[in-house]
Length: 156
Image (tube, rainbow, N blue to C red):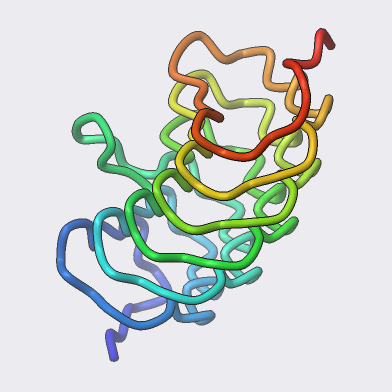
């Protein structure tokens, strides 16, 4: 078990071969501005408590693909509470996991995102929510490919 002081502002546990589930206690780290848990062997559902890390600005991003929750073995659906990460500007990625169900419409609240929004290479289904059109600051790297989405890209 990893113990972090509640004043921690940056967490980079990328490429550490961590296994198990993401601790719900990460939601207590409300002053964290950077969180990166990419390329591990984390399993289970993404805890809804991660949506409480409302000061989160970036998922890391030292280089391509090295951010947030990319390349783990996470399952279930993306929690709607991630829509509470309204200060995120980049490197929000749940790519290359085993997430299923629909893309939460609440992710449209991440309207400060300007680059690197990724949900590709999962098993997401249903339609692309029109609310993602609210991410109108996006200038590059918006990925939804390699899912089972059943609609065209919304025009809104």
